[in-house]
Length: 64
Image (cartoon, rainbow, N blue to C red; front, side, top):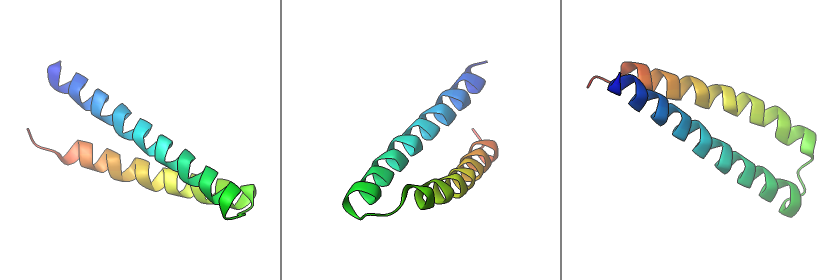
């Protein structure tokens, strides 16, 4: 049960960190670089799917 809890905590920490970075970058791009919000949302969904896939692969392939 300890390994499962570690994996769950690591997964949620990685997703939370990615969300914080994505929000910060989106805010900066929208308000300082004048990128339209619709373009940011489309790219954010694609990037979130890629990050989710990479994090899942990393967590499932680690051998402890």
